Image (cartoon, rainbow, N blue to C red; front, top):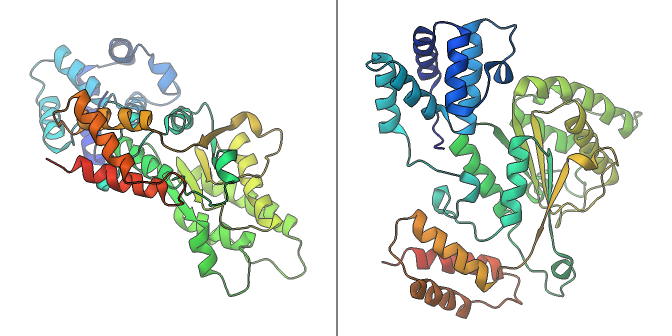
Length: 359
């Protein structure tokens, strides 16, 4: 599969061309069986009009990375169709190098890299497919109890999520850093539910629903009212991944933790388009929410994971390499780090980037 993003105008032209080539739902259904072994009824409600159903399929195909497969098959079925030929030419010119699996990539956009994190990659795929809706990323117990708290790179999770979003275009991200938010609240105040709600809703384009809590109102009542309003706004916002970082360095009051659990309950039950990723979170969820929660427990990078990283990174960057080069590169990186120091992961990442830039 190759993930490419179409403009709204391109998608409209593709829809019109497909409706012209496949004149009814039965013939379009045959196309889907060939390309994806799926039926039209599975991808779009039968109560919609045919062109609208085709557009729904294109939205799904774009998000899951098989829209080019539709165009290629359509060109086989209708060789010489000018609209399809034009679109194929445009996408080949404008599209980035195809990414076979964005979840497996080591070299991300913006010069970022991601070493190891196999369990994170698996967990994000579960969120993407809808098998799970909430991800908790936390340190392994041995790291959390270390005398020198080692920074394990939980925040690097956002880089992979951002990369998947860029490649697939299947969702939007609402990222909140609790450490940054704490600096923005009035002096000597904690991050109360209203502050966190404003951050989330501002990024989702619905900040108008956040009301100030009257002095005589309980936070439990305010949270319930907010969650009711948030549910309506979130349904209109489409697919959004709420990513909240720095739980491990910011202590939230019980009232704000209850707000998060209230949002999690809605995501579990009535907001299937939302995902929530909590970095450094350690509080328990309500029992009814647990089936939709998955976890990644972060451990330190070891030599074997670095070997795998450089092997895959060299392939992704089309850099010639040998097993000997990979082994010597790993040794060079490991010589420059101390696994007992808090900056171990940051240092490994910096040295790995430097090695990749070498001719």
